[in-house]
Image (cartoon, rainbow, N blue to C red; front, side, top):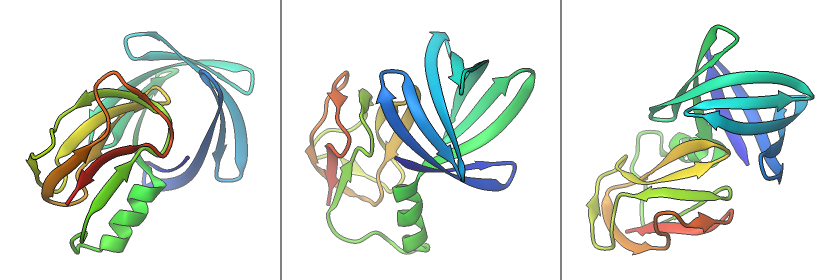
Length: 168
């Protein structure tokens, strides 16, 4: 899974591959890390990065923004998956046309579903919350329209590339 991560006006391309439960191979630009991430309490994670231990308080602020507090330093980061970034670039302010089939780009768990079949949605409306890699991601409508199909329910674990919602 590829992400674009922006921190202090610098953008990084981040590739993440799940090796096993709680363990990931992470490539940031040209550097590689093995990360073991475990939620310890609330929003505090115990991280083992290339065998070096860290603790980080990761607070989701909405709109793909996170505040990460570690070792007394606060980092404000924006995380967006690469596919969404490409879609936004392609749109260039224009509208997304036609039927949109939203798929999960990584395995995860559906935390909540905010829509039902037949609901009208506006571009940017939150359709569901998907937890993947210990982060909660808002899956938003790429266009205004009607929810034609809904493939997931709350609490369901899903595989990468699973269909989530169809908007037309």
